Image (cartoon, rainbow, N blue to C red):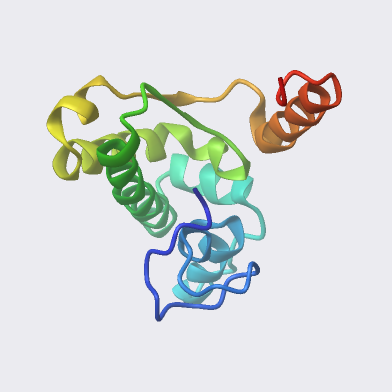
Length: 149
């Protein structure tokens, strides 16, 4: 989902496209948005989450905005594919208590109601490397011939 185009005139993504969701919500982007706050900027997502949890309004705002951006993309996904489950993972999974309500809010507002209301959004159990474990599982399944049969 990270390479879904959100803004065709947006920043260039590492995939070579422009305006991918990843350019708006990646850990690097979150940290760069906080560099202009005047304080010493956080250097990791863990620090952003910790600061948000202790009342830093800028950190909390940026994380909620990320949730809204993801929610908009998920709302479109609901309209197209009607998924029953969305797992929040990766580095930003650490911010799930702020992200998930923001994602849910936008999905309910912008998604097809019947699909949006049925979507279960929760934190993935595998942590920051969820995507890596999933890729490994797919590779093992393919090596075993399970995907091609």
